[in-house]
Image (cartoon, rainbow, N blue to C red; front, side, top):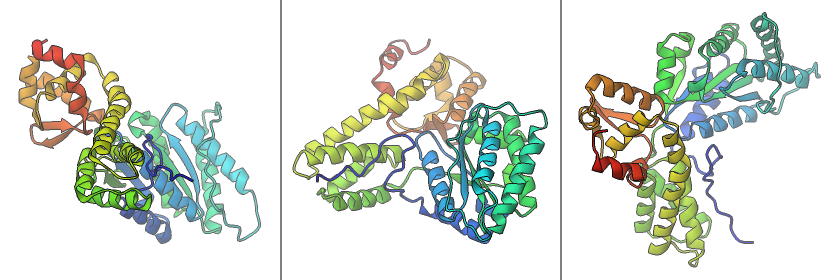
Length: 376
């Protein structure tokens, strides 16, 4: 049987290698063992699009399930609180009165999508129901984890409601965990706006790009274990092509491995070049095009102006290129930071948060038009 490609370049998919992230899962495991109120049981993961936030939530969920916890896995869309309430009721029904000493082996309930209209006293009912559930779980030496992705899109009042209930449960020393994930600037704004003082005490993990050395070492092991030969020089080139960006690690690895299998299970110059090119094209057609198209025309113009630089861009220079004052240019910058498209590198400088975005923009017709008509 032919070897299967060991890489998984699909957004949110669980990759076979989590480079430099094992300590985060271990922190959560230790918190479960230390019991209610342990710091890791209240965590927030932030980082730009494609950096692996959803994957990390999945890792935390797996760790909870391995410890016998129930997991409610959700995304911050309309009806979030109703769905959590429905999942709590489903968990209570699943647990039932069961025999003493019964231990849950893990039930993932986040796929439930029950369309319900709860009465005005919904919060009271939800709080009582989850309290009763956790009291039963505590007796059985287990607990409940609520995982919520993309909290940058959540209704502030709903997040406050969830946080208030979880805070109450922690004060009661009940076995509850809450892990969240979202874009950096939006999460920062949520916390600074006072949506929940309680959430400011959460453990915060800012997911950064992985070092090129770590990527190269991971590639070495993965290619070797899957029967594909690769030289040290090609390993370095392969690692550098990813920029240390988790989604690109999977994407580049996938296409280069695939090309190598066609050339005798060896990574040649041709296989490397072809694989990297396919990966970048795929990156542009999925992650980058989607992120770019979702922006307003003026925000797109800011990115096009940034693409003229080979590295970090001066915000003052960008404003000048756009023909606007610094205050107006700052409004563009804040929106793009909140969208997770750019990041601050130093005072007065920004850069693309996602590798290959600059190259992607330079290949667009809009960039060519901008060079011809720099101020419009």
